[in-house]
Amino acid sequence: MSELIRLDNICRRYKTKGGIVDALDHVSMKIEKGEFAAVIGQSGSGKSTLMNILGCLDLPTSGQYYLDGNAVSGLDEKSLSFLRSRVIGFVFQSFNLIPTLSAKENVELPLIYRRINKAQRSEIAEAALEKVGLLARMSHRPAELSGGQQQRVAIARAIAAAPKLLLADEPTGSLDKKSGEEIMSIMQSMNDDGVTIIIITHDSNIAAMAKRRIKISDGRIIS
Ligand SMILES: Nc1ncnc2c1ncn2[C@@H]1O[C@H](COP(=O)(O)OP(=O)(O)OP(=O)(O)O)[C@@H](O)[C@H]1O
Ligand SMILES: [Mg+2]
Image 1 (cartoon, helix red, strand yellow):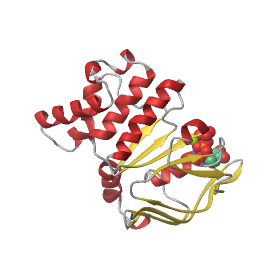
Image 2: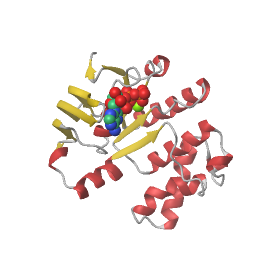
Image 3: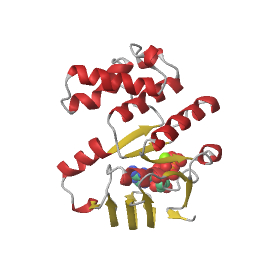
């Protein structure tokens, strides 16, 4: 296997009126291509801060982040935005679907940004919805779907964009146990297709389904 992610002594310090918070405190780790890792830790331990940095949504205060061989701190906004749209897929606890669009239109969105023609878009979106078992619901709007179904649409949207890396921040956090397990099994099949996956969870049953667990406490990796 080869390395997809390397963090060297990453620190992320927030300065607030109430004082300084070291949300990440000298974090170093490697993730190989093809891994399926769960980041676990208590509320406030720094999981989302870590995810934002991994997703190139935030920059560390100090330290180096290498993604697929690129030193992220040396990249301009155009290259960062390329990484965020072409290399990384995101799934959030709150689904982040566009309420006025159908499931299929939501899945097509990243393809529209890539100027993929309508016929191809339709084909890719339907294939992605089929993967998550929602072809029959493709014309439904998010409000007409259950929480688990909405999350499956969000994952189909990520699948359609064909990322190398999928980052999921509490993807099962607002779902019941059964829907959460379905989401995990869909992510497992993405991983079988070669996508590297990192999920954040505070649910130890969900974490147990990943191949590797990374435990964070007070901004430090403890195991
Ligand atoms: N924008 C911010 N400004 C100041 N402090 C912040 C900011 N974002 C996060 N923090 C602080 O950084 C620490 C880590 O926060 P983070 O959101 O990464 O935790 P988390 O592990 O994701 O928690 P949760 O499980 O509740 O989502 C917390 O102490 C938090 O208060
Ligand atoms: Mg969080």
